[in-house]
Length: 292
Image 1 (cartoon, rainbow, N blue to C red):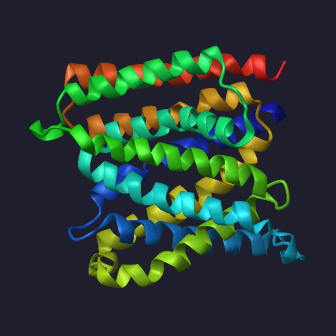
Image 2: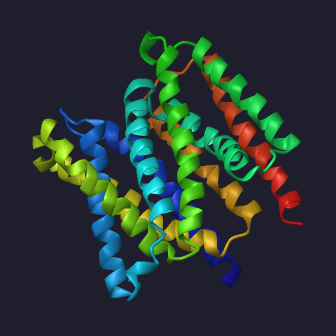
């Protein structure tokens, strides 16, 4: 039973992450990706701050913060949030979530090669071919609501790149700080940086009943609760199990988009999403070789 605690926390975090795009689509009229990002990061950081205070997880020596990778992580997660929320608005929850999440490990491998000369494996090459094929199938399949996806599909692809960079940067930060403090600083700094910009966008929707519920869902549930669950779960879960459980996020997000939000997908787009998911599964089979 003890061995199941880590995977259970990881599964919970992935399920909570999966509702992010759906919550954005349920936000009242007037919402924008910029304000959505600010709300999520601000409430998320405040939630984690409260959690850290209750559990005495704040560091006593703030000079130990590795600011270079931290600032890279902050910039990356800021861009990721904006690109992801814009992609959901343009191509839908199902496509936006699957493309962004499925391309993340591929981009992470590219960044690792450029920075650390870590050569990608044959598994990565095969996974990349599947991912590219998936993106083309989605593009040629036509967009949601009879619109062409075309360039809009670059939004979740770029989001995947930013997420890949963030993962590598955060990996360097947690060598010096505990995961909770890392997430607190990352989200808190994003909220501070983005706050002045939000004054140029509508914010009245936040103070409606629907706006308050969506804001609490985004900030407290998908950030403040999900991130600590994720960091705890990943610490006590093997890479193979963690990679497999991570598939629940895009699958759940796609299911919510199709069955709850009634997003229309062509056969070609469905095949493209399956191809992207297959690329992630290929990378899972690579894990035993990397940790043998």
